[in-house]
Amino acid sequence: EAQVTQNPRYLITVTGKKLTVTCSQNMNHEYMSWYRQDPGLGLRQIYYSMNVEVTDKGDVPEGYKVSRKEKRNFPLILESPSPNQTSLYFCASSSRGTGVGELFFGEGSRLTVL
Amino acid sequence: GQSLEQPSEVTAVEGAIVQINCTYQTSGFYGLSWYQQHDGGAPTFLSYNALDGLEETGRFSSFLSRSDSYGYLLLQELQMKDSASYFCAVRAGGFKTIFGAGTRLFVKA
Image (cartoon, rainbow over all chains, first blue to last red; front, side, top):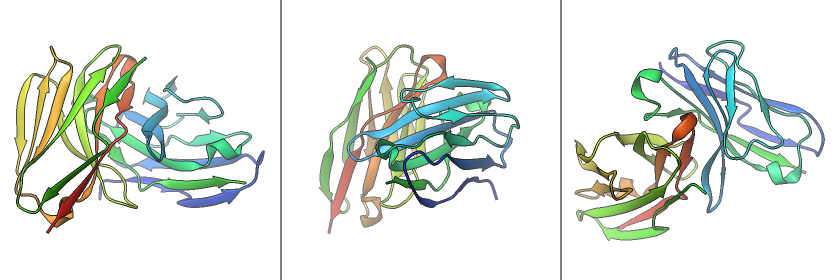
C-alpha cells in the first residue's frame, strides 16, 4: 500500500529536549516536505527536499533541521524544542513528474512542548 | 509577501452546489491544488490545475484563471460526508508550496 508514515503520532516533551520526528514514504517520490498546522493558519511549510542531499527552507524553518540521506526518509529534527513549536506536523511527498501538484500526506504528529 | 485568500466558512444544504474561491499572490506560480481535510485526519488531494480552465473529477471540479490569480473548487450534489476543511495551495517558485488558511464547509440536512 502506498503511504507516508510518520512517527511518533503523539509526543509530549519538555523545553530543550532534542527530538526527531521520522517520515518515510514507499512511493519512490523525489519530493518530500514538512508542514506545521496551527488553528486559523492553515499548513505552513517548514522544509522541503527535491532529492537526496538537496533540502531548502520553507516559510517557517526557524528552530528545525532536516536531512535527506536516503530517498525514502526525511526526518524532522528539533534540536531544542520550545513551547511555540507545539503544533500538528505533517510530512508529505510527491513525484517530480506531477510537478509537486499532488502531495501525499502522512497521518500527522501532534507535538506538545511543555 | 506571499498569500492565499479563501473564505473561512461556508454553509450549504445537502444536495446543493457550493463554490469555494481562492485568490493568490505568490512569487512564481506553477499550479493550484485543492485538498480536503476531515477533523482529526490528514489532508487528501482533490485536484490540481496548472493551466487555465476547468478540471472535473466526479462531483468535484476546479477552475483556474492565471491572469486573475484566482481559482475555485466546485462541489456538486453535496453530501454530509463533504463536511470538512478545504485548502487551496499554490506550488510557487523554488518548489515551495503555500497553503491558504482553509475553508470550513458545513453541510446541513
